[in-house]
Length: 232
Image 1: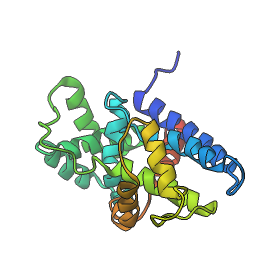
Image 2: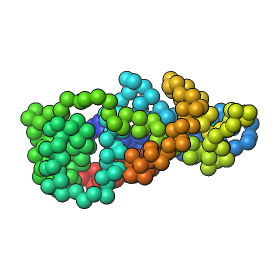
Image 3: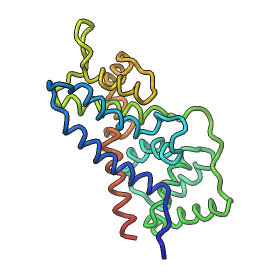
């Protein structure tokens, strides 16, 4: 029997391949060599695009995963129990974010076998007895993927010899300049000053994901999810 396609798994596998490609692109940057700035822009651009917020009509499954990712990272060390899923299910009746979190956990067949409450909730969703609540206002993590991708890019550029900032008299060759130019190629308008403010607040960005940046957190989630589903 042919294996059916799982949209979320396909998205996550695609991201995994992108992470590998991004690391290869950064390995080709030689700080100070001719053309190094543009090579850096070329390496950073797909990293920012892969955050999916760059395109308003981007992959909605991927967008949903990125929105719920901070919650998943913060709760990763929390012991899951059938009772905790029952509480989350109750909360999901009025909280859209909790409904998204349940959708993510229900993707893993191991969770469905281990937690009857989650399996019962998935059946109700399938039958239409459980539906997502109305979504009110802007998602609290709407800029998490953007800001975290920016911080990850700057951190990598710094490891290659770039300075994060520059003063007004210096050439526009800092890591923040690289990211600002790459954002322009993604169709996003964010100045050097805007990028610099996000980097200045990097601790706040990472605190939203339990102290991890997007690349670190997403890689952990990808490996855990794919390895578990392969065993089923």
